[in-house]
Length: 567
Image 1 (spheres, helix red, strand yellow):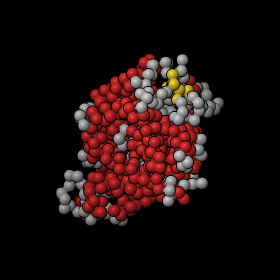
Image 2 (cartoon, helix red, strand yellow):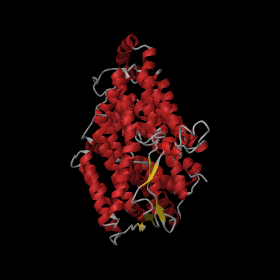
Image 3 (cartoon, one colour):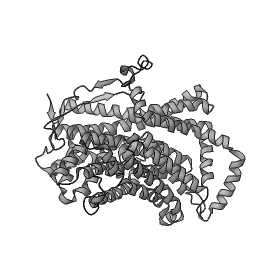
Image 4 (cartoon, helix red, strand yellow):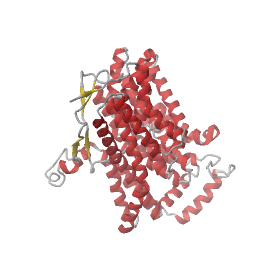
């Protein structure tokens, strides 16, 4: 028997909205205020979500438990698999000494921590977001920043703040393609609309990062580099999104930004070298003169190339894994005479219908444009085509390259799993909570609360996407969840559906830094166990202010700046 959603189970929009908010409020409150560990907070939040789903929304208990297991499985794979593979590669680099050489090579480019943050967290992180997504940029960028001498909490927070403006085009444009599929809008038009919103924030975010770590004076000291970093990425983002398509926006933008910043820093350095642990009156010239002489004596170009090659393997691997033709072959959807015997679909991407949940829950208007939309719950164990597998392959290639014995690599792998065990349990609980709220319909209740804002709805549309990402940890999932609701609301209010639906994705990117999954990943990458609440408290104001600015831009584009909306 199919169970249909009821988005106002208490007969009062206000009371139903408050009930729907409770699991999220409990989770964030325990993390940020009570300073609980993420593992304990996620467990309590999940219990509250189950009680709300069964006791208030009337969801069958067995279906709610099935949604819990489905979410936990998705949290472990593919999300947890990415974290495990990325941290394994990081551990191999530490073991071989390659990470120390990488650190010195970055210092040679610039000893200034402000510029290193731009280079690693924003430019390299944007490239990784475009190629892999799903937490890989945060895990890798945070680990590299910590290795470069950043305090752990600063490394985690900067990686989260940087992972915003590229997210809508992440994983080769997956969020845009998903939004187009859900809403029926043209994917190229959505890409162009996002390309007329996010470049403004690609200019803002690098400056925002530097200001958050070094203050206004610190920003003034490196504003030329900030401008080069932001403008190069924003320009490539605008051109690719408007004239090429969503798939390669971040990959090209990140590569262009890396190249532009590298070339610029070879002919310009700030007058004062700012470092978290440096003397305040140290000059860039002094630091770089000493640093270069030491580096030239110890690290030859050959050694630096050797140290960076595992991360080149990573970049190439995740890019290839994300290409649709390669993914289709790895999933067995496209088979040739050569691959069919080796890669049958049932082996490379087995699927299981989730018992007690698949085909048992139905969306109803206004969450869907159909009278009733049956929700399918299918778990795909796409072990070969998953982004984490691409990272793992890069790590395996790096083992002989770094000169590590396979037996020692196996020991590092086991130690890596033990260290990440608690984080994997936390990620599983976080995703279980998200799946329960989505399955019972409480997420739509929260979304509908914002649809009553009338003429202010363009401003609120961005907040709806932000809420979706904060709940699910994914811009893709937020678009799948709220895309149809955004379109229906836009049509009812005589607003442009293209603008409003795109705002779901571009506003959603600002919620990426506060979703529980990303918080846990950043804490794990920087060894900040039980400090997830501190990270959340640091980044939450940034997330709120940035989504408010995006909402303001969308509101202006619905009025005096309507000429910016593609026809």
